Length: 270
Image (cartoon, rainbow, N blue to C red; front, side, top):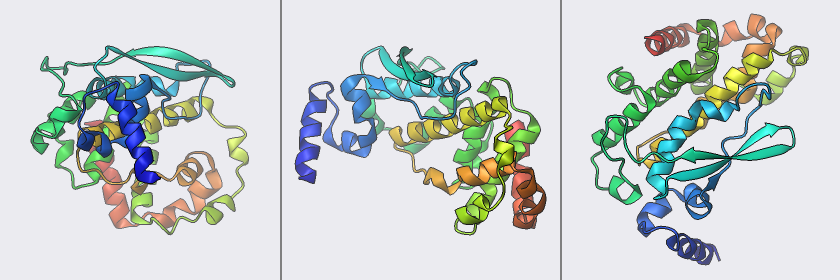
């Protein structure tokens, strides 16, 4: 049944595209975009008095759509109120920022990896910054944060960037040590008095984080699992639970973590 369902899905996609089976099997999560020309951006907390958090990374998605579809437009369903989704047309980009044609899904398999990486860096605005020289998988994390710092509205303060970097470094270093039960033992009254704008900025980064990783997958670049750096419980405890930030966070930051936090924050802000 599994193979039969794949075959039916592939037959359906073939009605809408001429991509090879190998290309389509590499990115099966994009099939909905290729069949319906519609997409639901990553779901996050929304600030309904501001632009949707997904708008921050719409530029990245427009190039992903340009690789996946031949048409000039893809519709995104955006959460504009607690119960309402609105279809917003997004122009699919078929030309890179430097004016060269954007390759399609089949052509990507014939392009050398350094060139595909250069495409990602150019689209994300990181070309020439040197973030790709960081050790794997830190380079991809730095690219997502670099893009977010330059497209978030309003621009994030250095203190917020440092707290997010701290959360990512601790999550990577202690993947099993940060137990949910330990985090949930702290009172989360602070979340009731949350700063909605701060929530919105973090939601924008989470969209940038997911969309740049997905663009990297479409470009067939070797990327690590995004969960290596993202622990939502830990991030929101660091941001909003003062008791945790004051008493437990210092115990998780050793000398090596401190060096990585300082280095990544400095490089991203360059």
